[in-house]
Structure formats: structure tokens, C-alpha cells
Image 1: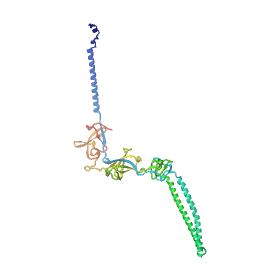
Image 2 (image 1 turned 180 degrees about the horizontal axis):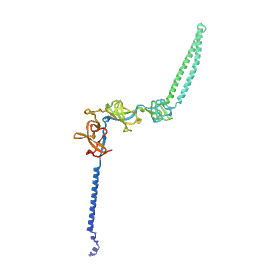
Image 3 (image 1 turned 180 degrees about the vertical axis):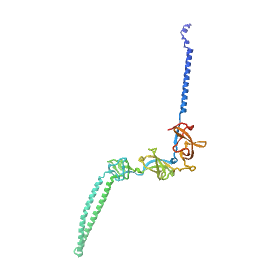
Image 4 (image 1 turned 60 degrees about the vertical axis):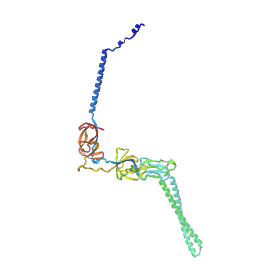
Length: 413
């Protein structure tokens, strides 16, 4: 079979070869690109290293304080609420309908001030009726007294006639009976007058009870009834009868009540100093003292109530505010070394030792200075300093381990 025609129709693959000059040119460009990329990387690395080396170290600093201003360590911490000693839900002594309420929340009231008025029309009607009955009874007494006088004179004449034998003893007895009856009627009338006056007193007391007054000076914190509602000293009629008009609080009696675990109650003593911090004002430390320890324990919670008094009251202190308290120990005594009092106190973490000598790094104007100091006793988180520092000096409490004298640093905010 002749394959000459098929071979002539096959493509020429020799035309697909790459020219050696073109291959060499592309290889050169590739190596140039790699070299340029490497140079960029090296330059970036050198720049980053230079920036890292030139960046200032950051340090945290604290101020040296005077020895007498050091905080006292807390023996015990607890939490509780502000509670007023004088707090009253003012209610009525009688059941009645509210006519007018004269107060609102936030209003300041004085002792005896009228807070609300109840409907007293029924009591006034009863008072008027009783007074009329009394007056009518009083009006009969003069007439009875006139009759009594006449009866007594008649009794005297009858007695003389009886002694003379002119009249019988029966007539004498009748005259004596009339006198006694009139005396009894007068006594009964006077008793009725006294009873009426007593009932008038009850009616007047009920009228006075319709005026609900404040039991002490204070501020109204809750208005519990409205005009038209029924009010009663006891709960009646389900939710349709109120039991109080308003709640009055004596802000001058605000104090703190906390529950202390009974395992630590032995640490708490009357007159003990306390620092209170309100949840609403966490940066405000309020000086207080223990007023009393309630002499009973809660068997369920295992706690004992402690009442704490504010040294100075402030309008920001409101009832039922959450508060945290720290029971403080005794005042720190001024310690001396060789008859010399310490100059300052610094945090323990600011002090380091070099060759048996205590030293600190002082911070001023963005530079640290290595300074040797003479230390004394430890007071809580602080150390006494007898030489090398004065109150107000700034010392480094946290920084890099390789900190050097004279090194420029940035203060961490």
C-alpha cells in the first residue's frame, strides 16, 4: 500500500522549536525580577528593624506618697443597701374615700403637715345630730330644776303640816317622792349631756382622722392613692381599697445595712471605721462608722446584720441604693528606723535589688533615672522609703527588663 500521499499531508513539527536567542532573553528577565523582589524584601526588613529599634519603651509609673496618706488595709468587705431609719407608709386610721391628695413624689414635708383629706361628711352629720340632741337635753335641765325647787318647798310645808297633825303621812310621802323623781330626772339629763359630748368627741376625732398628716419631717418618695379611691387601715375589698396614702422618708436618717457572714462578725466592732462606695458613684469613697451590730443571726443565710452610719450625709445618697463597704483596721502607726521617720511610700513592684542595694527608676520628662534608695518596713502593697525619694516623685512600676539609666521612654496612659 502506498503511504507516500499520507506522509505528505502530515504537519511539520520542526516549526514549533523555540529560538535559542529568545530562550536566553526570557531567562535574563526572570532573574532580574527575582533579584529586584529580593532587594525589596531586604529593604523592608531593614526598615522594620530600624523602626522597631528606634521605638521607645513604654512604662507604667506611680507616685510616691506621704506615709500618713497611705490607705488603711481593709479587714473585711461586704455589700448592702442604703436604708433610712425613719421610713413610714402613711395610712389612715379609719376607712374612707380620698377627696384630695396634697403631695406628690419628691415633695418635702414637715411633721404634722396634711398629706391628704378623706371624705368626712358622714362624721360631720353625726356630730351635728349629736350636738343637737345634747343641746335639747341641756335645755330641759333648767325646767326640771325649777320644778325641783317648787317640789322641795312643797315638801317643807307638808312636813310642817304633818308635824301638826293636819296632813296624813301619805301626803308627806307623795311630796318626798316628787322631789326624788325630779332630782333623778335632772341627774339623768346631765348624764345624757355627758354621753352626747363623748359621742361628739368621737365624731370630732373621726373628722380629725380624715386629715392624714406626716409623722415627721421628710420627703415623699411614693404617692400610693388618688382622689376618689377608698382607703382603709386594713386590706379590704381586694385590690379596690388602698391601705396607704404616701411613703415618707427622713433623708437625715439614711444609713447602710449590710449582711456580714457570721464567721467574720467577730472582726466588726461598734464605732469601727468604714469606707463606703455607692454603686452609682464608684469613684466616691464615703467615710462611715459602725453604728450597731444587730444581736441576732439569720439561720438560713448564716449572716448578721450590721448598721453603718454616714459621717456626713449628702443629697446624692438615696434610699435603697446599692453600696459596697470596707471595714478598716486601726490607723497605721508611724514607724521609725534609727529615730528617723520614713519620707515616702512606693509600691513594692517599683523596687528592685542590685548587689544588695534597693533601687528604683524615676520618671521625669520622658526619661528614666536609676536611683538607689533606702527602704524600711512593708505596709500592705507599699514599702517605706527613708532616703532617695520624696512624696510626689514618679517611679516606674512596670516596664521592660532591660531598662537603662537615661533611656527615653513613653509613659503608658
